[in-house]
Image (tube, rainbow, N blue to C red; front, side):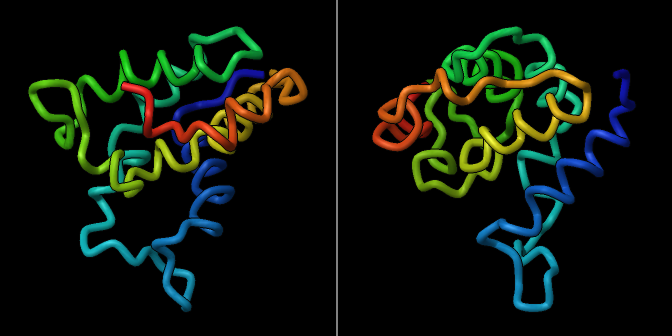
Length: 130
């Protein structure tokens, strides 16, 4: 199913913003600058990276994000490190699996989470990958 970037962004916002730790009690974005959220500031690149992957291996999605999104993100240092990601303040990194799920569900693709090993998801934070 073909979806526009505007549609995909609305679907992801609906899924992610409601559970984001930066959300206020009123349900609004609690970031000082809501436009600073890497997930939505770079959403076209995020969607393109996720849609380019055809795999049940979450590491391939992480690699696509690192190569196509993190490389153009203003938060990334010249040496490739990202303090925002290391401090678990990057919404894209923190919510990558539900973002992948939302985009793939919206486009009629299913990401088989049963093949994701528990250690790959819970014991190794995405922030540990560069």
